[in-house]
Length: 192
Image 1 (cartoon, helix red, strand yellow):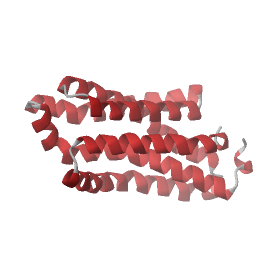
Image 2 (cartoon, one colour; image 1 turned 135 degrees about the horizontal axis):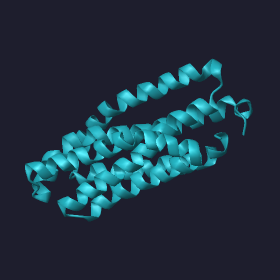
Image 3 (cartoon, one colour; image 1 turned 90 degrees about the vertical axis):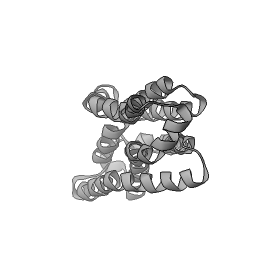
Image 4 (tube, helix red, strand yellow; image 1 turned 180 degrees about the horizontal axis):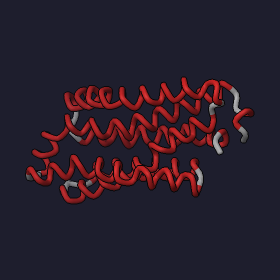
């Protein structure tokens, strides 16, 4: 669908879903900082293993970000975004089922792969859907969400950890990824 055929209401809906997807993948970087002590205790993780749990996500996320953008250019934004959300959500949700620290590290790396597919697609979709005269505002909102979601994730994780275990952080992230994926589907036709 051409950009000019996408009305303001649909653009706002697309921006909202893209910002949710962005917040989930960026927030996962920060939220684990709060959950680390509980994870170390419950998984009997060594200092080195805990460092890998913390860094596996960020390393794969950052390392594959450019490749994620290239895949979107080559195969289409919609499919890459939906695949990234599925990989991120499934890997985050699978952490709920494992007690082996090595598997948690692998799943964190897999979630980082999904995040590397999601993040560049969110910006690409926004710039494709918004016309030049309103694109700057939309990208500004996207940027604000990118920075603000890390702080919000730490606060949310702290609240979750007051009532639940560290696994609740992964459950919420998997759930939010599923919501973003489900909410994106009706608006996917708005994006090339």
